[in-house]
Length: 411
Image 1 (tube, rainbow, N blue to C red):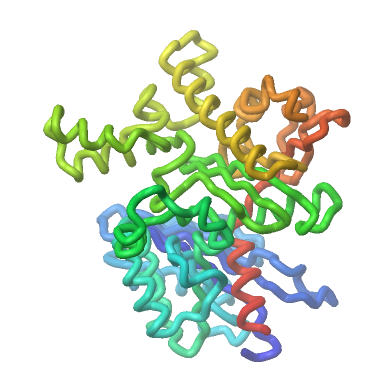
Image 2: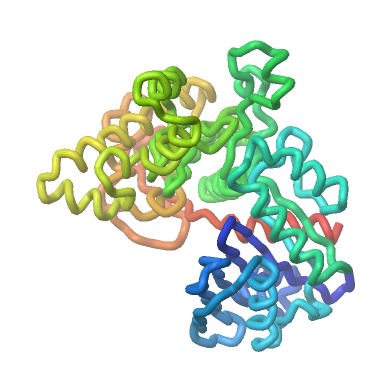
């Protein structure tokens, strides 16, 4: 890496999409951009369809968003289209200022506990983990291979969603099933959204004016996918998602915690196949299964109009949140803050208020006026007298990936 190479391209490759951001991590503020400055952001979606769409915003030049539609056959074509958009802004992948490409990889198992430069052995291990992440790791691998083909000379770094949670003690990570069976098939709790939980727990400590090692935080990452974590002194000690992202909180389309025997019952009584049950629990459950909507704004609108199904869905969602807040308070022993993040956590004031309502004996409270404020900045929403801080901390997974990537390749 040259001394002038300070840019990181962050890629998040899905099965039919690629999200990307180009950031400048230049630590030199002498006339250059601030560390973590976004130069361009974009999204390619519906890859493989006739109606593929690329939306690109060149932030470095202050230009308007550019959108194009038309067939994009595969991820290679998608990344070539992204490279062309970046080149049009003078930010091409051939730039000597590009230090590395950072890839979001969902599942790293137990082997990958930190960002890792990708070589053949690393890629093989990511492939071996496909059985425990069949919806995510194959798309991540495709993105990696495509980027390697475009810039074989450039460091490619994997940042794993599971890495932050590898600090969980065995008694939190193990399921109570036969040990030999569990070990043979890698069955344990891995957790996900790790880059978000790492970023938000650290930012929460900063908000409190303390070092992360001094702070115990419950992080509630509430988006269409949702997860909670208990973070003690900067280290995850428990998290709600498990072997897959299905376990834990009620989500947009996922059930979260459920009696495992429900799957047997559905197969025996309803004649459903394994695939049918998989689709039911992952895509037709959660809020959408309860009331037909997975958009919290629409659910709140329906509640205001007296819709009882929407009200019940909201109450179930909040009840599960409260259970995890209580459980993780017990796990941590001392809680300094509860931090809300992601789309729902950052924007849905009624969710935050309801989740902490009635928890005053645990030191938690919400100031209605502070909670109503909309801001893109980290902020407290608890009254001064509250023993435990309640915070809204916008997540930034792309910046976290870029920071981890740049730290690794510039070391």
